[in-house]
Length: 89
Image (cartoon, rainbow, N blue to C red):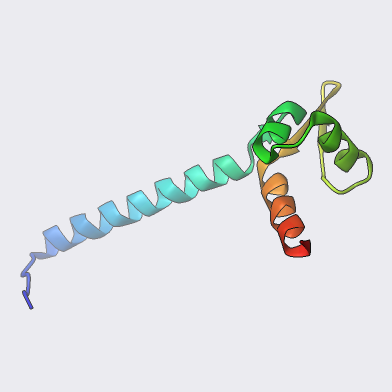
């Protein structure tokens, strides 16, 4: 087993870098989860038809957002729903 000897400044730099990387990853994950998808994008992601996505939105299975007359689905809702559908199978 090797033991590394670091100065206080080196240790501080390593910790700062690790924290910065962890925060960047968390921010990326958050941005991806809140990304809004069109019905077409959602359908492609789940390999189902746009009609199926529309049906899930209509019957309340898939939460949605209306903006400017268009319908969007949050990526996080889509992923949560996909997990729930797998558990039911």
